[in-house]
Structure formats: structure tokens, C-alpha cells
Image 1: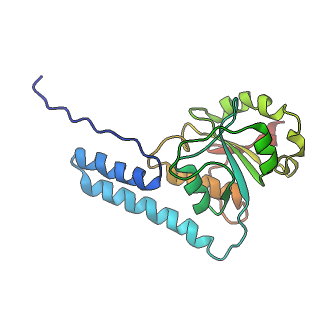
Image 2: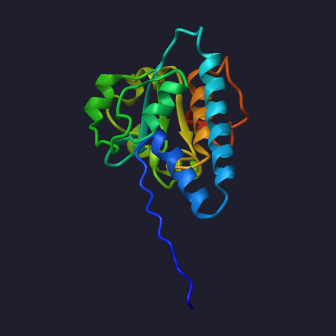
Image 3: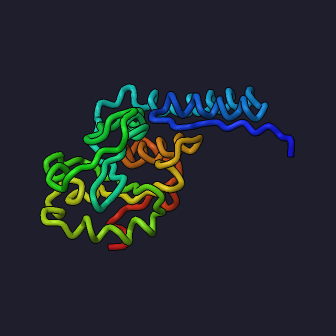
Length: 198
């Protein structure tokens, strides 16, 4: 035995904390420069998306759903990612825990886009849960449903975990919100159209 074990506590609520935690882990592992490089690369990739949107005024509203039954919106870093990807998050606050919401609140918000990203769920697992949401009274009246802008994402691999893949999460949101501007090749693996198989 005789080894000293260092415990590192990580509990980020937003993107700045995610970046700090990446650097903290890299430092603890003795690869501080690699952590700095990774964070710089992540910031550069995110900045390229924001720059591409600098002359684009459209900011579609989006409801990011982190849980289907009961309904929960995505909080923490997701509203930050939505803003960076050229959207307006109708629920959730940056740096705050994911809030519960009601079906009536979702109907009232009537977002342009709905992204389903349940915590720990793959796309097939999310699709299994969708009849609960799609069976609600007024579902077909939602703007996102009428315009077929409801998407299933891989929350488990991307959105729910605070790490380097949050850059890909941002790319996915950019593809969903601005399909004419962005194509990073995440369709089919990171997200699918809900209506594609319905």
C-alpha cells in the first residue's frame, strides 16, 4: 500500500467550472500543459461557431428536455451552449440546476425547436419514452411539432456529462438550430429527427 491517494472533487454547474475542472484533473495527473491545451482547443472550436453566427440575427427558441416524465428542462451548462449555438433557451438558467416544468409551461412557451436529451439515455432509449410526451393533449399543436423540428439526442454521450464532449454538444445544437449554416456530421449518431421513423 503506502500510496497517497488524492481525491479531487468535481461538481461543475456551468462551462467556466467545466474548464476549471479539466485543468484541475490535468494538473493532478501531472499533465497540466495538456489540460491547458485541451481547454484552449475547446474554446477555439466554440468561438468559431459564435463567429459564424455573428452576422446571423435569427435566434430560434428551443426547449431542451432533460427528463420526460415528469418533465424537466436542462439547466447547468446547457443554456450557455444554447446561447453560443445561436438559440434562445426557453427553460433553464446557466449555472443553475435543471428545473422541473409542467406540460402547460411547455405548451405556453411553444418553442421553435424541441431537443430531447434525457440524462443517461441513448437515442433509442429516448425514443422508447417519447409516447409519454407525444401522447399529451396539445402535442400536435406545438410549433416545433407542426414544423417537424423535434429532435432526439444522445444525452448520455454528449449533453449530460461535463467534459470535452460539450464542444460536440454545442455543434449538435448548432446543427439543430441552424441546419443551413452548420453540418458537423453528428446526424445519426448525436441526434436524429423524431419524426424520421414515425
